[in-house]
Image (cartoon, rainbow, N blue to C red):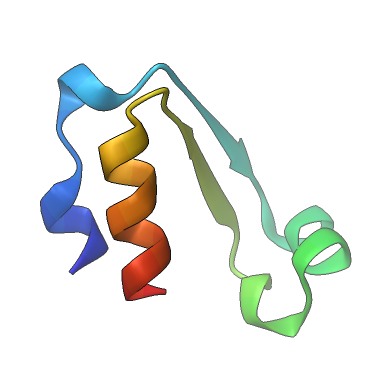
Length: 52
């Protein structure tokens, strides 16, 4: 559901954290890696927080 909200115009920057480092930072659920999207769109941030 969250991915449907993402628009390329809303993304300011993104980071990819791979496997072991992601698991060390975010726990067992992140063992395959993490994608961090950075945005300044406050409406998008509010919607994502409601979903998660």
